[in-house]
Length: 269
Image 1 (cartoon, rainbow, N blue to C red):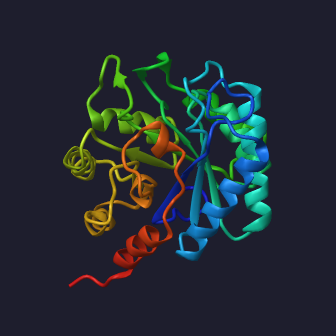
Image 2: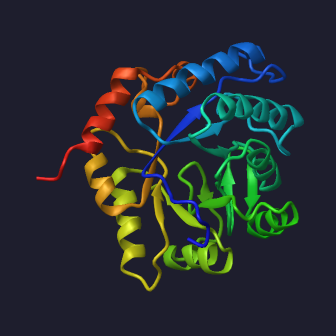
């Protein structure tokens, strides 16, 4: 990485409830969302997790473009977390497609990185056709003087289908060599699919930092530690599994987090 920021091995993705201006029937007040964010962040810190990604997962359906209330709400919550937990590395990931908005939020809350889901190429997702935002990201990051913020770029994000799929190695080359992403996020439709993607890149002429964006749990985390530079984790910290209205707004479970981190710290046999 060109940045001085060292990629954390474990990054917990905190999925926020719907914001007050959301049309979602389960929307919460900003006070409720701040309380949700702080109590879950406290659990992560007590479990010795050193990085947190804030995501507006509750605001469905996904808006195009990213609406002002999401930028404002994420900035408020992120600033509260930054003030309360000054040593925690923060990142931003938005459901909506774009680079300026997450980078602006990240700079405002002193976050270390952003995760951008469609960085190169084109993807078809629930909200329609999305085109890569690498140029927007690099130019805007330079424009606001935020080169200290790392870009973690998904390649073939599992929540969509690529349009005009390039070979994986070439797509990663476009993201890291030409698009100057600081790390790639690889997540297959299954955990075996993820491992296959990682193997393909490791056997190529490329050597980017690789993050796994999903599907990590207490049963496979030791293997993840062997093959990837870092991982993004959330669902396995919850008592309610899957992606349902209930699970997306559920708190993390302190015991599940502690068990996960206990396995992470176990020495290899």
